[in-house]
Image 1 (spheres, rainbow, N blue to C red):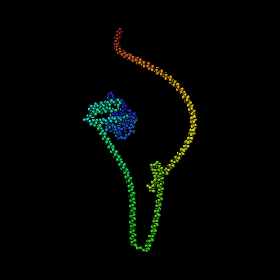
Image 2 (cartoon, rainbow, N blue to C red):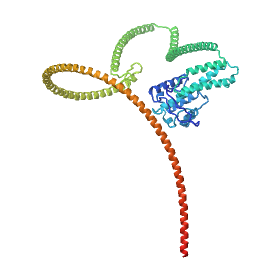
Image 3 (cartoon, rainbow, N blue to C red):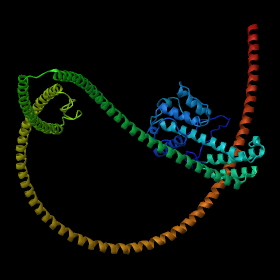
Image 4 (cartoon, one colour):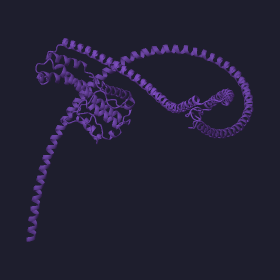
Amino acid sequence: MERTSGAGMPRNSTMSGFGGSEKIKDTRPLHDKSFVQQCIRQLHEFLTEQGFPGPFSSKMLQSPSTKEFVKMFEFIYRQLDPTFEMPNSKVEEEVPAILKALRYPFVLSKSSMYSVGAPHTWPQALGALMWLIDAVKVNWSLHKQELLFSDFSGDSDNIEEGPEYNKLFLDYTAETYSKFMQGNDIFEDEDDSFLTRLKKLYNVDDALLASMEEKYRILSDEVERLEKDNKTDRLMTTRMEKVKLQADLKKLHSYRSSLDSFKAKLESRDSELKDELETNLSLLETLKHERDELQHLLQNQKFTPADVERINREKRELQQTISSLSKSHEDAEQHKWNEEIALAKVKEKAELKLTEYHKLARKLKLIPLSAENACGHDFEIRPFEFGNALMVQQKSQIQIKLRKLISDVEEEISRCSNMKLSLEESCEQVNSNIMDKSNDLKQLREQIRKLDERLDSEMQELAREEQDWAEEMESADNHRKLLEKKVNFGYDEAVQQLKAAQQQYHLVLQETNEERRTVANNLASVFTTAANHLSITEKCLEDLHSRIQRICSKAVEEDKASLQKMQETVKNFMSKANNM
């Protein structure tokens, strides 16, 4: 089992000499950035695997707020106690109290809960979360062991209550704790030996376990694959069906709107045709009635030659009138045709001008409505969507807007022309400065040429000096070689002298070591005798001190007695003197 604390570091025991707990130093490198990032990755993996309900990311885990920290703490603690509910008030007191109840070996202060994401408090809070995650994993492993050994024991209620199990568990705990106190974090050998002993104790069949695990793995992979395939297939089919249905719905809406408009047109046309049919029927009835009357009149009337002549004359007049009217009708039709052709040409020209206007407006970024220079106005002309009155109104509005835009553009052009004039003046000034700088540059070039000539002369002089130096170096090299020969000769002599001195040193060293040993032995004997003498002297002095104390006490008592006698004699003498 691996923990987050650094390996190889010795730990202090948390138990004091009288059984109480004392504060210990946290040996985890919580202020190491790499270690903190590793803990953040482990926390992110744990929360992702266990399905953390709230939104979180690696960036949020770099500096979380107090609310986010409390949510993570509550989620992790619920892995130990599913019925746990974090109170809404005094969270800064509840979290340290829970950690203390769980025997968290380090202190997480209440003040750090007010600013969990701060750089100086987040590492300690992160360490507490990692310790809590380790506790959750230990709890899970214990539950797994209970499930592992529950099928192989005859008495499932007494698996961890027998003396054999208690002895094994205490041995395992003692070994791992001793290694943990030495600084180790990995106990794989102890875990393996503990598991083998438990398997022997409860007669666990490894072959059956392996076969069952293999079957479980195969079945879980198959179930996961089937669930994944079903989910992906259903999801994809439902998504495709949703997209198709949305497209069909859009088409149906558009088709319905077109049908509604077509229906409205047909209804209006039907009403017009009905009105026209009614008028035509009424006209037909009147014409039939007139025809019947004329036929009745024709059948009943008797014509005279004058009437026939009059009728023929009227007939000729009517024929002339019909011919003149047909001619005028043809002329009107021709005129109408010519007018329609002229109107089509005018309309074509208007459309060309309109397209040119729209093209120019797009180039000037006036249309569409969201264009850069439109300023929220609609400059697009739609000639055939509205009537003549609305078209004239739209034209007048667009003309007003364009005039305003032209005035704004003219103001901008005047401002830009003024700016251009100022820039030209500044450009002229810059050109004059450039001329001045070019003159200065010519002078500098002349100075550079003079400096180059001076440099060439100095380089020639340096070359001559270098040649002189080379000659001096050659002579110095010859002198050095001569000195090296002399030094080598002296070095050989010095080496021989050194060898002789080393031999003499070894002899002197041996003699010195022997003398040192003898001196040490003598000093040891002297020190022992001195110590004995000191101890004897101390005893004598103590005896003498005791004797002196006894003598002094006796002398004091004798002095007191003699003093008493003298006082009594003085009193007697004084009494005798008084009597005399």
